[in-house]
Image (cartoon, rainbow over all chains, first blue to last red; front, top):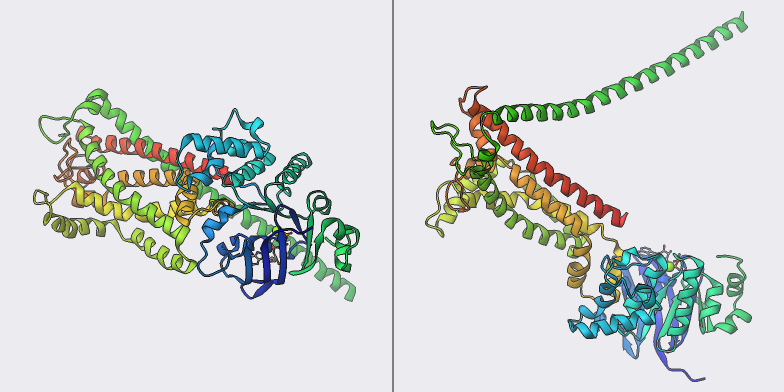
Length: 253
Length: 314
Ligand SMILES: Nc1ncnc2c1ncn2[C@@H]1O[C@H](COP(=O)(O)OP(=O)(O)OP(=O)(O)O)[C@@H](O)[C@H]1O
Ligand SMILES: [Mg+2]
């Protein structure tokens, strides 16, 4: 099957100070699929996914070499406005981080900062985004309560709704379930599977079963090297590299 | 013989260790008592102050009605025609405080935002100590700075400005309070979790939007606490207003004329030759009580806000 490539990572090397984290990572992400990034703790999964929306720019002493092409545009190019591109490449973080504002204002935030103030338009987007994030029914009667009053799983779905509201094409998830209980986790997984029809999804996960359940493609990182990449079914059944196999069978974690 | 000597030294050793242990225990108990005494001392001092204030105040209100005190617009305890209207002193305090806050809050918040959201670590390490120097200047220096520098300067633009006035005292007091506002607000903004900023950047925020739409509101209760503390500081400030604002109790909001604040009045009477035990003398305790009540409530509100802020993020 011929698939459109939406993100190309080329020879990515990254450093915190003098310490090299990513080593020559090259990876193509097909559009409208779920790609899982797996690997042992500290291997650089977060670092890699945060290169895709340049979140690492906020970290002092971080340095990146290489290219990340999004629809052919180099995100690390000289005259790229990353602020605009971040609207197309949304992100959901490991720890739910709703703003200390109302549920409504959390979801509306991304549109408001674009200078849009049309009440009806914003109402529409808030409703649509909350529905997509499978949260509408639970919160529709309390939109103006603080988002901090919600449960962890609901907070994470607020964060997903908030990301959806600005109409991204790609959504990055960095271990979105690691702070959640199994029921909330199942909901988020279901949501990720639903979303892939309209969005390209990249999800970092520690949980091999989760990767198997939600993803179409899997990339296995080990100590900053991309060891293996391919369709999830293939990686899980016939891993090419011994380290992948050992990781999947739980020999190290 | 040898065995005996051994036993003997062993006995000595044990005795010595026991004794040492006892000495250590004794020392610790002594230190504990001493520390307890020190903290009791400060509690007792506070209690003593409150007791003196209250008993003198009650004595005062046996001669002057509370209604007159709160509604009369003249304050003339030293004249034959005595009036005890706190409003004229209170208006002086409020005008200088208002001016000081109008200076300190905007400038303090701007510098806090800069320090917390924009400055590099290096800049922060240069600017913070510089700001703190402002807080270390003795207030008497600020007072003469207001009287001898700011007032003459302002007079070139405002011809009607009196030599003593609320305006320059308030302005200089505002400058003095900037570090208080900026350092407490910066603490509050700094305590806003990095995750919130990341969340906002990930939605396509510019830095200024992150600072003003996310960090600032998230830190609002901490910032409000800082502002209230600044108000309380301005109300209680004594030296600057005693030197530069005048000694003429006046029920007015005009910042260009000499006025007198509650604190300045207390200084004036304390340094004068009013005989102890008279009604005139007891006015300073009434003024003290008034100040105490106002600043106490402000500090309580500030403390509560600060705690609420900590509950959200810790
Ligand atoms: N801000 C930072 N400064 C310095 N080193 C960092 C920083 N963030 C991460 N690192 C280091 O970079 C390496 C990779 O970190 P990263 O967070 O990408 O790993 P990860 O694969 O996401 O791990 P985990 O599964 O634990 O989340 C680790 O060795 C970590 O210590
Ligand atoms: Mg991680």
